[in-house]
Image 1 (cartoon, rainbow, N blue to C red):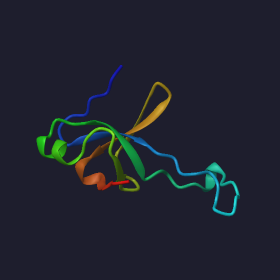
Image 2: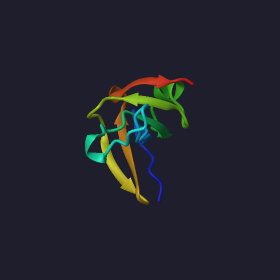
Image 3: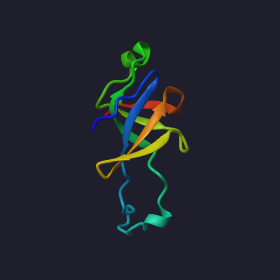
Image 4: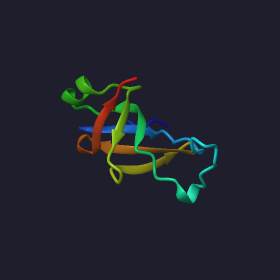
Length: 90
């Protein structure tokens, strides 16, 4: 199965943060914040959005933005354009 977002939406796979602090302590799942960065898997049909964001880009998104969907044991987020805060450049 494949998910193809419509209009001004993106399909994003959240990127988990490291599980250790800089001093080497492990952070338990209950103390972690939800990921706010992700890799774009698919871009909707909006032409303006396709010019700015493409598949494979890393984006920062709003803390409580988007809808979570699970497919093949992977949790994705479907975000609207307004939920995307920035494109991360390496």
